[in-house]
Image (tube, rainbow, N blue to C red):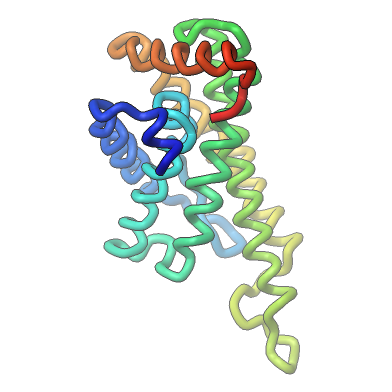
Length: 213
């Protein structure tokens, strides 16, 4: 919260709420995949680009908690893991990939849009990898006396293969497209939001800290 207070202005709090609602909505469109999970877009990196990864982490986590408590999506006992994978790993990893690829290009440039799309793709797949590892490890760590898995029925290699195939080939490109379209829409209609990112970046660089929010 301290980081968010430092980087998020009061007038931008409604934007954070809208971003959380957007993430909540697109995450509700789940595609079941083999191996016991599902694939879906998130929008976390787009929110991170606009408001910073700390604010994005809060917004996406709130959306995940509401989904679990109200709709049973993801499960109440898995809230912590989901918030870590989707609400921490994805926005932070995707944001820093975006910053790295974007470099000194302007927030309205085609390079920035491509950087955001790649950041969304990478962020979603890293989150999916973390989820697959968490699933698969349960098979090896928690078994009955006769060797029957207690919580998850597939070994690590199956969980990773199933999860990553679908996310690399399907959910990842969708996430990249959603992020790029979102960036393009904001650049046309609310350019001051991207100007905000440029201002924050310039402030970090002037202090000699390029990638430290």
